[in-house]
Amino acid sequence: MAVHAGVCAAGRPRQGGVPGRALRPVDHADHPPAFGLSFAQKTVEAAVAALGEDIRNWPDASPVTLQDPAYVGVAVMAMQGRPGYTRIRTPYVSDADAARIAEATSHLTADPDLCLDSLLRSADRTTTPAPSLTK
Image (cartoon, rainbow, N blue to C red; front, side):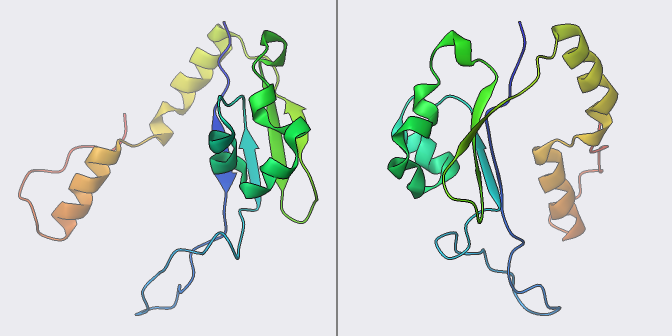
Protein backbone atom coordinates (compact mmCIF):
# COMPACT_ATOMS: atom_id res chain seq x y z
CA MET A 1 0.00 0.00 0.00
CA ALA A 2 1.44 3.34 -1.07
CA VAL A 3 1.17 6.54 0.94
CA HIS A 4 0.36 9.93 -0.57
CA ALA A 5 0.62 13.29 1.19
CA GLY A 6 -2.31 15.51 2.10
CA VAL A 7 -2.32 19.29 1.66
CA CYS A 8 0.36 21.76 0.68
CA ALA A 9 0.25 25.54 0.25
CA ALA A 10 3.36 27.60 -0.32
CA GLY A 11 3.00 31.24 0.61
CA ARG A 12 5.02 34.39 0.42
CA PRO A 13 7.50 35.38 3.13
CA ARG A 14 6.12 37.37 6.00
CA GLN A 15 6.30 41.15 5.69
CA GLY A 16 8.47 43.48 7.72
CA GLY A 17 11.81 41.65 7.63
CA VAL A 18 13.71 44.81 8.56
CA PRO A 19 15.92 44.57 11.69
CA GLY A 20 14.14 45.97 14.72
CA ARG A 21 10.76 45.79 13.01
CA ALA A 22 8.15 43.20 13.96
CA LEU A 23 7.13 40.59 11.42
CA ARG A 24 3.46 40.42 10.57
CA PRO A 25 1.69 37.70 8.63
CA VAL A 26 0.77 38.39 5.03
CA ASP A 27 -2.97 38.84 4.44
CA HIS A 28 -3.79 35.95 2.10
CA ALA A 29 -6.85 37.79 0.79
CA ASP A 30 -4.45 40.33 -0.76
CA HIS A 31 -1.52 37.95 -1.30
CA PRO A 32 -2.67 34.41 -2.11
CA PRO A 33 -0.23 31.51 -1.78
CA ALA A 34 2.06 30.95 -4.80
CA PHE A 35 0.55 27.49 -5.25
CA GLY A 36 -1.86 25.16 -3.52
CA LEU A 37 -2.14 21.39 -3.70
CA SER A 38 -4.84 19.16 -2.29
CA PHE A 39 -5.56 15.46 -2.51
CA ALA A 40 -9.13 14.18 -1.98
CA GLN A 41 -11.23 16.13 0.50
CA LYS A 42 -14.54 15.16 2.09
CA THR A 43 -16.02 18.67 2.22
CA VAL A 44 -15.97 21.81 0.12
CA GLU A 45 -14.85 23.70 3.25
CA ALA A 46 -11.71 21.53 3.42
CA ALA A 47 -11.06 22.19 -0.28
CA VAL A 48 -11.45 25.94 0.34
CA ALA A 49 -9.02 25.75 3.27
CA ALA A 50 -6.42 24.08 1.06
CA LEU A 51 -6.93 25.89 -2.25
CA GLY A 52 -8.73 29.12 -1.50
CA GLU A 53 -12.24 30.46 -1.95
CA ASP A 54 -12.03 30.39 -5.76
CA ILE A 55 -12.29 26.56 -5.81
CA ARG A 56 -16.04 27.05 -5.22
CA ASN A 57 -16.22 28.48 -8.76
CA TRP A 58 -14.65 25.35 -10.28
CA PRO A 59 -16.82 22.43 -9.04
CA ASP A 60 -15.51 20.05 -11.72
CA ALA A 61 -11.95 20.56 -10.44
CA SER A 62 -12.81 20.28 -6.74
CA PRO A 63 -10.81 17.74 -4.70
CA VAL A 64 -14.16 16.62 -3.27
CA THR A 65 -14.66 14.76 -6.57
CA LEU A 66 -11.54 12.65 -6.00
CA GLN A 67 -13.15 10.11 -3.63
CA ASP A 68 -13.02 7.11 -6.01
CA PRO A 69 -10.10 4.62 -5.66
CA ALA A 70 -9.18 5.44 -9.26
CA TYR A 71 -8.04 8.85 -7.98
CA VAL A 72 -5.49 7.59 -5.46
CA GLY A 73 -2.41 9.77 -5.97
CA VAL A 74 -4.33 12.47 -7.85
CA ALA A 75 -4.34 16.02 -6.52
CA VAL A 76 -5.83 19.34 -7.53
CA MET A 77 -3.30 22.14 -7.98
CA ALA A 78 -3.67 25.92 -8.20
CA MET A 79 -0.91 28.25 -9.28
CA GLN A 80 -0.88 31.99 -8.73
CA GLY A 81 -1.33 33.94 -11.94
CA ARG A 82 -3.02 31.05 -13.76
CA PRO A 83 -6.79 30.81 -13.88
CA GLY A 84 -8.53 27.65 -12.76
CA TYR A 85 -7.08 24.44 -11.41
CA THR A 86 -5.38 21.38 -12.81
CA ARG A 87 -5.21 17.76 -11.68
CA ILE A 88 -1.86 16.08 -11.28
CA ARG A 89 -1.00 12.45 -10.53
CA THR A 90 1.85 11.69 -8.16
CA PRO A 91 4.03 8.70 -8.97
CA TYR A 92 3.55 5.44 -7.10
CA VAL A 93 6.11 4.90 -4.34
CA SER A 94 6.35 1.41 -2.87
CA ASP A 95 6.34 0.88 0.89
CA ALA A 96 9.96 -0.26 0.74
CA ASP A 97 11.07 2.88 -1.12
CA ALA A 98 9.04 5.13 1.18
CA ALA A 99 10.62 3.52 4.25
CA ARG A 100 14.11 3.80 2.75
CA ILE A 101 13.63 7.48 1.89
CA ALA A 102 12.10 8.25 5.30
CA GLU A 103 15.05 6.64 7.07
CA ALA A 104 17.61 8.37 4.81
CA THR A 105 16.07 11.80 5.44
CA SER A 106 15.01 11.39 9.08
CA HIS A 107 17.96 13.50 10.20
CA LEU A 108 16.30 16.47 8.46
CA THR A 109 13.35 16.46 10.86
CA ALA A 110 12.98 18.12 14.24
CA ASP A 111 10.49 17.59 17.04
CA PRO A 112 8.43 20.81 17.48
CA ASP A 113 8.30 20.33 21.27
CA LEU A 114 12.08 20.13 21.43
CA CYS A 115 12.38 23.21 19.22
CA LEU A 116 10.09 25.13 21.59
CA ASP A 117 12.11 23.94 24.59
CA SER A 118 15.28 25.09 22.87
CA LEU A 119 13.74 28.50 22.14
CA LEU A 120 12.61 28.87 25.76
CA ARG A 121 16.06 27.85 26.99
CA SER A 122 17.69 30.47 24.75
CA ALA A 123 15.44 33.07 26.37
CA ASP A 124 16.49 31.86 29.87
CA ARG A 125 13.03 30.54 30.66
CA THR A 126 14.10 27.03 31.63
CA THR A 127 17.17 25.33 33.05
CA THR A 128 16.65 21.86 31.58
CA PRO A 129 19.69 20.67 29.57
CA ALA A 130 19.22 20.90 25.81
CA PRO A 131 18.43 17.59 24.07
CA SER A 132 19.34 16.93 20.46
CA LEU A 133 16.68 18.34 18.13
CA THR A 134 17.13 15.65 15.49
CA LYS A 135 17.07 11.88 15.41
